[in-house]
Amino acid sequence: MPHSRIAVSGSTGLIGAALVRSLRTDGHEVVRLVRHPARSGDEVEWDPKRSYVDVAGLVGCDAVVHLAGAGVGDHRWTEAYKREIRESRVLGTAAVAEAVASLDTPPKVLLAGSAIGYYGDTGDRPVDEGAPPGDGFLPSVCVEWEEATAAAEEAGVRTVHARTGLVVARQGGAWGRLFPLFRAGLGGRLGNGRQYWSFIALHDHIAALRHVLDTPELSGAVNLTGPDPVTNGEVTAAMGRVLHRPTLFTAPAPALRIALGDFAEDVLGSQRVLPARLMGSGFAFAFPGIDAAIRAALR
Image 1 (cartoon, rainbow, N blue to C red):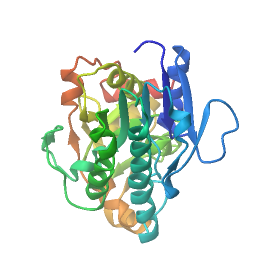
Image 2 (cartoon, rainbow, N blue to C red):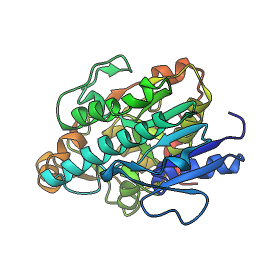
Image 3 (cartoon, helix red, strand yellow):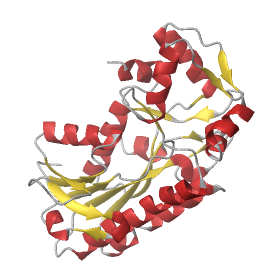
Image 4 (cartoon, rainbow, N blue to C red):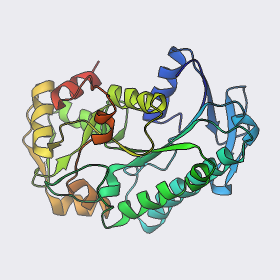
C-alpha cells in the first residue's frame, strides 16, 4: 500500500504498538484511537462502552486496524471479567464498524482482531479457516466478535478477521510471562505438555498484518499463526535450548485450574491451527520454527 492514512485501535498493546512503529517507519500516517479527548493531531477519541467514535478523525483513512480488547490472560476468569472480555470486543468492534460504515468515503479495508480461540480445543487435528467454531466461552466470544463487523461489510468495506495465535515476544502477551520463568530456571511443561500451541513470532505477525492490508484478495477469516504448530512439551524443550536453562518443573492441571479458574481449560486445550489463507496468498515467514521465533524475540 502506498503512503496512506491508517487508524489503529489498541495502539498501546503489544501488537498495536509494534504495528504503529512499523507503519510510521515506512512513512504511513497513523492516527490512534484513544479513550480520552484527543490531545494531538494523531489521536481520535473513542469510547467502546458508549459505542462512540469521533468519526471526523477517520475521514481520509485508507485503512482501519482494530486491535483493542481486554486481555484474555490478564486476570483470573471471574464472571465479571468474562463479561469484560466479551463486551470489550463485541461493543468496541461494532462501534468501529459502524463509524467506518458512516463515512461518505469509507476506508478500503477494516482489519479487525480475532483469535484462534474461535476453533476451541482441536486436539491433534489440524484446522484451517474452513473449520467451524468450537464449543465454550472463547469460541462464542470470537463468533460474536467477528459478527460485530457487519456494518462495515454491508457498506462494502473489505473486512478481514485476523485470528491470532500465541505471539512469541518478550515484551508482553503469554510469552512475556514465560521468558522470566525460563530464564530463572523455573520453566516447564503445563499439564501433560501434549497440547498444541499455534505460535507466531511478533515480527511475522506484524509482517502478516501488513500483508493483509496490502492484499485486496484477502477478506474474511485469516489465521495469523506460524506454519508449524508444536506441543507445549516441544515449546518447553525449545525454551530450554535457546535460553540454556533446565526445564524440570511441571505445572499440574489441577494446580492450573486452581490458579487460573476457567482460563485453565484454554491453557490446557490443544489448538493445531494452520495459516492456509495466509500462505496461499504468498506470505513468507521469516521465523517459521519455534527455536527461530524464540531467538527473534530475544533480539
